[in-house]
Image 1 (spheres, rainbow, N blue to C red):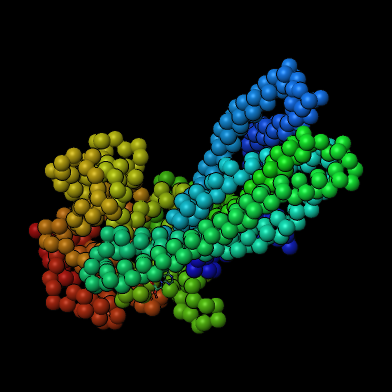
Image 2 (cartoon, rainbow, N blue to C red):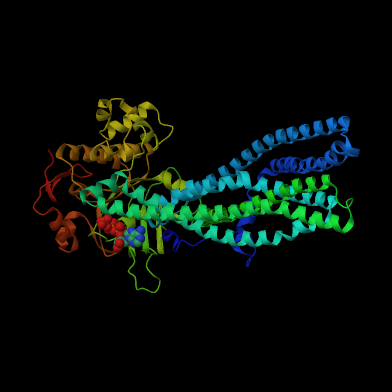
Length: 632
Ligand code: ATP
């Protein structure tokens, strides 16, 4: 839940101010059925018919006893046959209608769940990066899978059973009144006890249910984190398996305890209902006896008493179910609330109403105009240093800009502001002089390609991973991009070529291969602007050279902002920006900055001091650790 801190729940939640949360949630749940009005009406009709017809049989019981079986001492077989035929036909009819109703209800519930899950996924896709950095993946997945799944039963079963039970109860009470008002008064007098029980049990179960969901989410987040490749790697190399197991056991024990409590609350309540079921017929016989003693044998017939006890079980059964249903509804309201909580989060970074597309032939000039940015996780009252403060810089179209600086200087943050992964908190980032906040996100994504430090590949074929860059690319285009990224030959050697499956997060490929595959993917998407966050880990000489060649091809003709860790990139850069504690402290070419003998010169000495690395500049001149070496 920590992830939601500061995310700003939107004002989108419908309902009146001051309305209780439960009712507001219920109103939203009901409104999700709105697109399926006709289906809802059909289901309701079927429910009313099947539930209403059910009252006829108990009424027939009275006629069977008083007029057919014991009429003047001998049975009226003719009438009895008709009555029995009706008593057989009616349940068969209601049973068949019930099957049809179940189908329609399920189909309806599934559609509503599908809509909800789709809405949630689409909403989450548009959430800003900030939301994901602050929320555990397991928590998000738990809401999408467990919570939406959890409400499924309620939507498919509970809604129709509520209507059905209401119809059964109303029709039964009417039938009871027709039979005997005294016995009806007795039955109804017991209702308040049930209502009181519902409230008690409902609130207890709700508390336990929401704790259970929370623990389940925590457990799934924990297992997700610790059983992933990176998590396992970490716990193995730090020898922390024992602690992880203990942590899991603790949560597992808590879950088991909660689930037992949940079951017990339901079960003890059910036991009480059963006691009522057994006790009430006995009370009916007693009251009937008292009435007959007072008013004579004709006051209540034997048929009336049998019919009444049958009706009574019809009354208490739905009441028992309604009590269960109300408990279920209350538990699932908690789940719905968790889903709506996410749906109400604002997207923050969206297209402005007057946003326009960045033209496909954009030149790709980038400028930062007095840009400041701070992450909002620090308490508002705490003095905070922005991740970026008053940064102004210009990058000409087609040029390579290297961003360097100590760890935590704000390099990554700076690169995130260009594709609007975050929005500036002050100043403006512009592409070709247009504030990126005035451009559509789709056109920005098309114009900007990002190669991150940690290469992320989907667990699917190499082809599908590459096609992510351009879904319409032909095999020839794929191969051309892979060749340009110097990965084609390696792919061709693999068992299934382009159809080879990449392991979980691409773990079956080497670091260098993954990087080159990621480069091929960006080459396919052909962005005008390239953001390159170079991996800090060193590669062997062969891989380094392949990567360097791939990068050179990739950067050709594009405006590139490189968070540079490799000397070759720094030396080839047209301009180097030096960041320190969120401020732009120096800028210039490598030679100029060395001469300036400031932060850059120090950094350079620390990172590359003594090493001699060759690099080719944009104009073909070969540089060796900053010295110009005659070409050739
Ligand atoms: P490195 O070279 O180590 O990757 P960097 O120069 O890229 O560092 P940034 O990642 O841009 O630095 O971070 C700049 C500052 O912002 C740091 O102080 C960092 O702790 C902080 N920061 C980064 N990401 C977040 C976040 N999601 N929430 C809060 N603070 C953050």
